[in-house]
Image 1 (cartoon, rainbow, N blue to C red):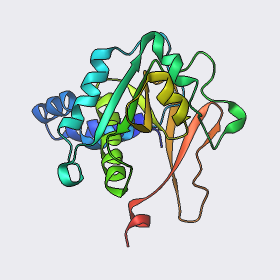
Image 2 (spheres, one colour):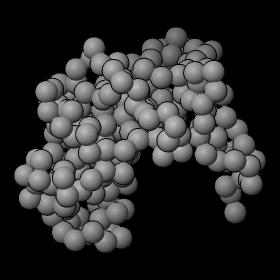
Image 3 (cartoon, rainbow, N blue to C red):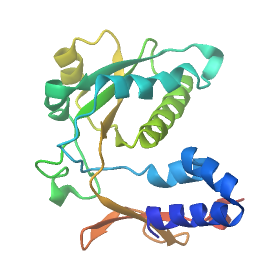
Image 4 (cartoon, rainbow, N blue to C red):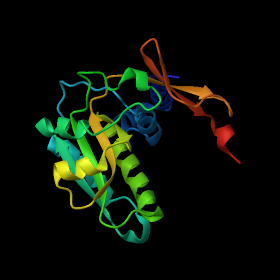
Length: 213
């Protein structure tokens, strides 16, 4: 089911409850709406250049998110403008669709956020990493942008290229998404890998009844 279809249904529901509530919902998108729009984009509109100011707003959410033992070990390197291709060259995309060589030429992201840790990676750091990455991508969506988490990148080359003082753990690609991405409902045991058909990127998802124990 398409992201925008579900989002419209949420808006219609609020509209039926009354004008004031609908206005509030429109200016303050619900978490459900943000989550539906927060897909993993592998193609972007190159004409839109993500600014440093936008990246700072995205990273700023990490000053408000919880972290294990409140150690606040994560650090963030902003890569944008003419420097973006320097990071892109060390990333690998679309592991489930290697024959496509994603992203297509001309649809590369225009910014990246390299997430590093000041301490050795452990389960607590990984928990913080997940919270930070999801929170930042939700903020990107709120700003009208899109992104994807990239774990497949050359760490050694990334450290050398950007003279990083700490180990990079994850890279977020940020830009203006230019893909048609739809969620599709599956049952347990069915194929879970994402796929493409007729120019649409489908993401199989289990329903709530399937994930409850």
